Amino acid sequence: MPATTDLCDAHPDLQVCAPVFDDFGGATAFHGPIATLKVFEDNALVRSTLERPGEGRVLVVDGGGSLRCALVGGQLGELAVRNGWAGLLVNGCVRDRAELAALALGVKALAAHPRRSEKGLHSGQADRVVEFAGVRFAPGAWLYADRDGVVVAARAVH
Picture (cartoon, rainbow, N blue to C red):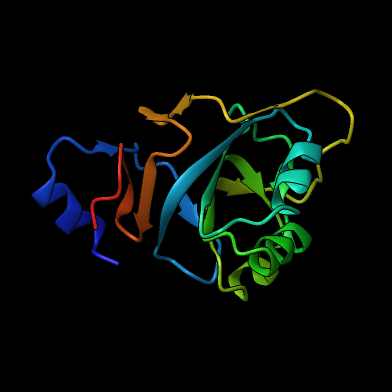
């Protein structure tokens, strides 16, 4: 995978996320077509999505930036690896840092939080355009992430 710095040099029109995400997964560089979710403090839709084949996609989860609970933990990370997801970008928190770090999965999120989300608290939506960190994430666009950041292109640019 090309470095995000090289991609930015070659494609100045790429969208670049604000530098607000930390690495939690065992893979610090990942890329793939985007699938999106919009949820709030309820990860039921995250689980049901990760139960389906990922086919090398990156799941972008707009959790509203909530810092009150985790939307992804070790069990969901294992599920993502088993089902072929390339990575997760979470506008919210994760938990089980050590478990996530042991997985061959890219995981970027705002922070870690020990509290799990509540099931059935809120509904969620899938496959819609979501916006956070200064970027518009559309299903089918491409996300590239590494230690230097996260960039998004309308199509594959590697």
